[in-house]
Length: 218
Image (tube, rainbow, N blue to C red; front, side):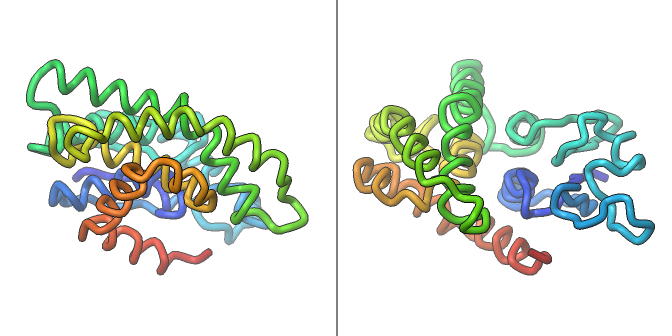
């Protein structure tokens, strides 16, 4: 059976969202990030990213990992591209041009957006107040102004990123842009991005994923 390693309070959320969109049957193995545990080496610690059993699956020590018919894949955005191509129907590419565009948007999300969106999340919301640096958050907002403008322009034609329909490209990019929500000024300057993200988050599969995420221990 298709197996996804990782908890939903991690980038595995992207893969579970796509699996729900595609109606896939899968098994989720809860692997928590070691840094979230007070004592990862404790005998009763849950399965985590530095546990020897998980390192046999992913020697990088990160989640998520996908196992499917003997294929082992790491990296959440690449996993989604694979799932969309193999099982996703209209979520995946219909021709080589769409395939290229979906790959482009995955790399754009990883290189242009996520290094900055994650800093907004960390330094405005996620970390304890004493560990937040407003200057880091402000620098991330400034770094994202041009990428947000580019994304806003790309959405002008149809409201979606590839093929005039909701696809894996939207899932991959939306899951990165979601981290920037604590910076409303970015969305005010890019109204198409705001509407697109709201439409992505209104999908039943996303709501289902987030509901299950909320049930996980914080």
